[in-house]
Length: 513
Ligand SMILES: [Zn+2]
Image (cartoon, rainbow, N blue to C red; front, side, top):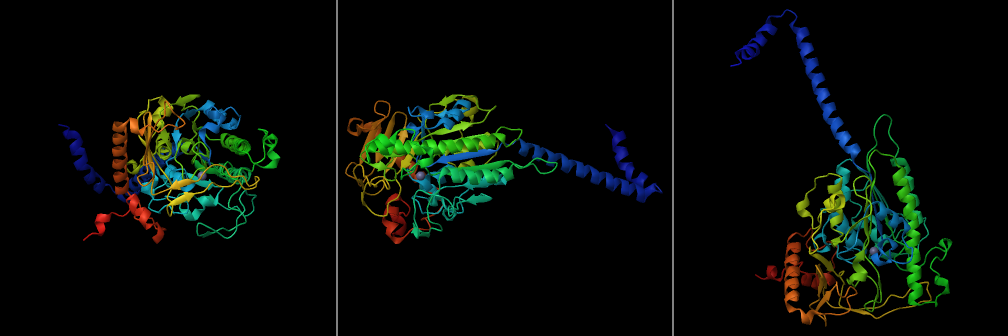
């Protein structure tokens, strides 16, 4: 069979050897081989470039302290978020999006690593995300993305580890007008400027300046895709919107120092930051690539206005402190106006972005799940998928006092929150169950369908659900602790040890001989 070809192959070297022009033939042979190799490299490089150039620019925006029900895009009656409304109309909105902790750095770390705070180890502001953490920015940079971040609070200063993966990390507020003047130190770190934050207009200016340079096409080839994270601090207290923005919700007519006035000013800060977001979105839309940009807007936590007696966020994980907007727009891929009802959480963000743009990642480390199929194809998500919440770490037990509203007549609202040990919650289906074993009310159960404001603790009426959810929480804690990135967190002080032990960071059995 096929002996003709076999003999050709066997005889061919003989023929070459007999050829008097052998050196010329060899050169031709080598040149041909080289040309073939070059063509092959060019082909595969071309495929890689084509794949990369089809990847969209990605804009990820986090509004600090933006509770979902104060966004007009999520049904609020004041027109606070016109830009978010437009983005949601052109893409998808999640009706129930959650933050795992009502604290800035831990929630952002969860969004970037797709892990819960208990496993990434940032249990309060000032803890550093360990270098071992793999972040969304690192994974996108590995895929050829040009990466840049523009943050607006010292809480996200690069020393705290969220700069991993960013070519540019702009956290310089020294020349900007801020809302919280502070000099000296914060959480043990020196504050370089006169303020610990900057307003959304200054952050947007910095991002647009970078984008203008990054969006330029190099001579004769496509530019790299861009990943930009922009963080706006404005809605965080103190509620002092810039005077130049006016008073769209009439706060000046309200009783000075009232809760009503504080909320109107909070809403005004949201509207101001949302107006800045429009500048950013317009610039991304105009940045000119063949693929439409992927835009994700969310928040790190909400804000309580005394629904459970306390104003602010840190010690609370009730709905007002953890429910956030999550809006994703990708024209041509996500149908306009889609609303997804199943609950989702910030650890889902990184998994979703990677999946949407077609990047394989080490998903075994992810606590979050990709929402890509729900976004693009309308695949129904599991309504009962559990989501876990954890109160930020406090150094010691005691009362967390109400925070006075600075520059607002010194008003203070609400009661203090008593913090004893750790507090977790788990949400699944209609239920949200809280467990704080060392507190006076150790177990709380709320029926979110009947009681979305969590005013009526029905734990005593539903012992089976309490036991089931408590077991789920315990199983989850064991799994989280098995996957710890650091043990214990590097920045922990001796004062924290007792609390860390109660969290499970150190196993008491390990110390026993
Ligand atoms: Zn925050």
